[in-house]
Length: 167
Image (cartoon, rainbow, N blue to C red; front, side, top):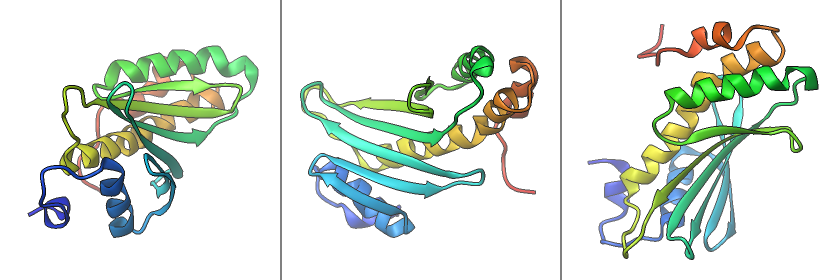
């Protein structure tokens, strides 16, 4: 039985409550910003990622953004945007964008909950895993493009295949 199945046995549980429970279990730093929003810090292999999940009632979605700071030299922005596009071609869940003004690389994903649907704990865990997994997978390519002077196609070679297991 999964962790989330042990804690949540009823049909509907507020998705932000599920995220809070998961953050407590994983011992991630978090802040319940509002009833419908939570922010947390998740330590990855390359860096600490900031995640925010928010339940958006008007459009019936659970939104996730995962960010990390990235302020490459302005002359590297076109190459970085090309690398972001190449990374997005490899992502089936969510997409990256670069917010130059804020100096943030952003991974965004939204779970549609229209028609009275609710987010299952397993779906939320998968959203978070996809965000961290993709950030970890493509971080080296973004770095090589932004500061290593590598061409986007060359930089993407480090992220072409998902790693399985650990050496």
